[in-house]
Image (cartoon, rainbow, N blue to C red):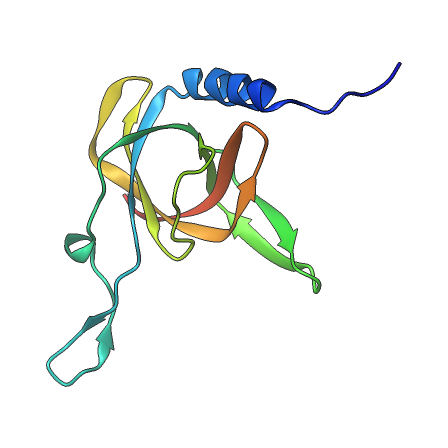
Length: 133
């Protein structure tokens, strides 16, 4: 039996199938540098974040840890999230979960993106650290 490479149509179908399983919605916000009157950088607060429009995602609340890089730096995370392949991500930004299984989440749950984007054939995956209720 020979393994045949996947065609672009196969990848399109994989991605469409994955996206049809995304039952949650989330919004993304890039990291923005906020400075005070003296030019000193201050910690960014949620009200300074420019949240994008909600997009479909698949949120998974399973904490864990993963080793990254040549020195195998251990990264602890609180949750993971899958999004459509090709979604533009600021790896220093935030994700707000705004809907779970079709039900709105009051004020959303905010997570910081931890580590690099994990590219897969059907979707991307991000590891998240909870920062706000």
